[in-house]
Image 1 (spheres, protein in one colour):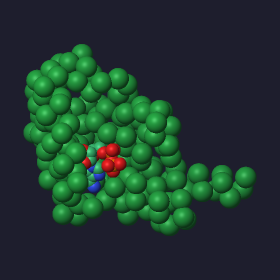
Image 2 (cartoon, rainbow, N blue to C red; image 1 turned 45 degrees about the horizontal axis):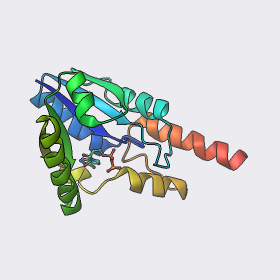
Image 3 (cartoon, rainbow, N blue to C red; image 1 turned 60 degrees about the vertical axis):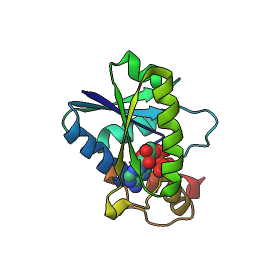
Image 4 (tube, rainbow, N blue to C red; image 1 turned 135 degrees about the horizontal axis):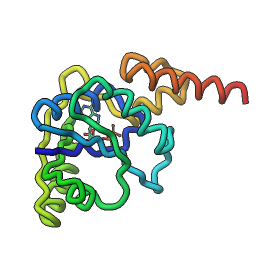
Amino acid sequence: MRAVCPGSFDPITHGHVDIITRAAELFDEVIVAVGRNSAKNYLFDTDERVELAAAAVAGVAGVRVEVLSGLLVDFCRDRGAGVVVKGLRFASDFDFELQMAHINGSLTGLETVLLPASAKWGTLSSTMIREVASLGGDVSAFVPALVAQRIDEKKRDNSNG
Ligand code: ADP
């Protein structure tokens, strides 16, 4: 069975990689779907988020990365994926994911599997990474090496400009 792991991945973190890796153990193929949502104020643009996600999962067999535009249920149907896999951190994730699971299930019968976040990355979010990084903090413990490098480059560009 083919599964989809959707998200903004701005940027991809060790928490995301953990969920994607576990999904790859459960399903034959996993498509990481990087959302293109014009309403959001991104740290990294779509191409960068795709590039960083692809680098982060390069060593995980059966995983590929694509851009998600439009409805998730349409994306999944077009690719023959019957299930989405999401990570669950805190109760607020559950409240949101339950609504998403119900509406997606009603739209096309798309199934949702919720994996508990690992204890190590259970409260990590891209929002926290962006916040800490924007204030000059070191986020290298929480993100893949290439992400940390790109954040450093952005910091340098900003301080030079
Ligand atoms: P965030 O919520 O961090 O901005 P995304 O919108 O990219 O991230 O989320 C995509 C998916 O990844 C969601 O299902 C979210 O619950 C999951 N996720 C994000 N961070 C983690 C984490 N630290 N552990 C487990 N799952 C996570």
